[in-house]
Image 1 (cartoon, rainbow, N blue to C red):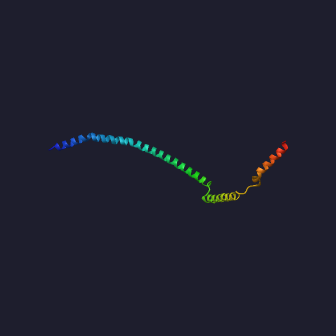
Image 2: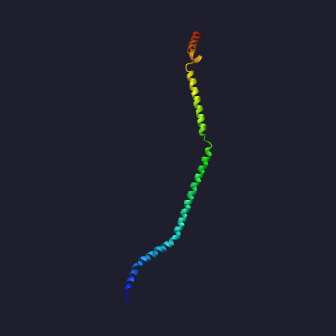
Image 3: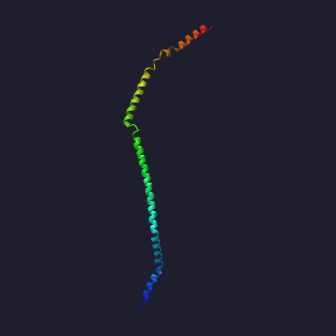
Length: 127
């Protein structure tokens, strides 16, 4: 009977034994640490959910604020209508000013005469 073949198989298995032991040790370590990995994943997920919930809450608050402020702004149609009315009033005021620019009131024309008459009267009684 030829045992050389069995010797070769034994040497092959014997040479790979440290690799197999290493793989078994890694697998056992993985099995030991696996529940901790799931616990950490669950904690990270809970933290992410809390952050998303806070962000959504802030977004909802902003939406509520925008909804309440929306009623305080004027509409574009109202602005355009009032802006046109103000432009017309300014135009009317400018044209009335331009028409009256050549006209002076009685006092604006004759104030130097009144001052001169007043000085003459004061000089007459002052002596």
